[in-house]
Image (tube, rainbow, N blue to C red; front, side, top):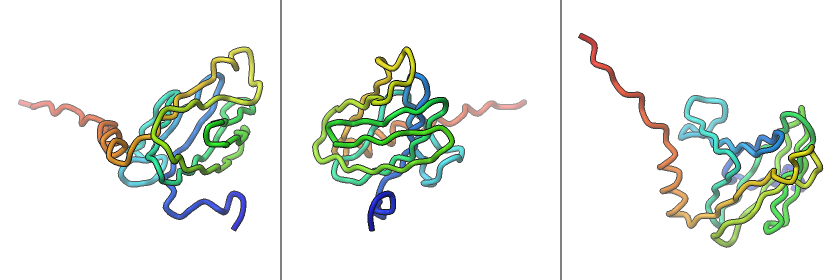
Length: 141
């Protein structure tokens, strides 16, 4: 199996949506599916566990962008109207830079995000902290 079809079966999904001049990363909630009420999105940050494959579904909202994490030797264009998958597996905990490698407008130079690679335990803790807080209950009289 080669190319886009080589994504490991246990890859953690995330969605990377590019727009001038930011990266929005959406994670599926506990149901494991996108576009449901338990999804959550973080601006200009990606959090992943170490030693687990991650598959990013890349979407561009406006112009061509390029999802580039040099430390992972990963560079993939995000094209408006297309859903393009790219996968990677981080092998060392730490912080890394995600930049746009396609000139996408005047603010291109500031289109960056921080990729945080957590230990498995730290990632589980981070993920638990992202759960939306339940709406307060209001007592009706």
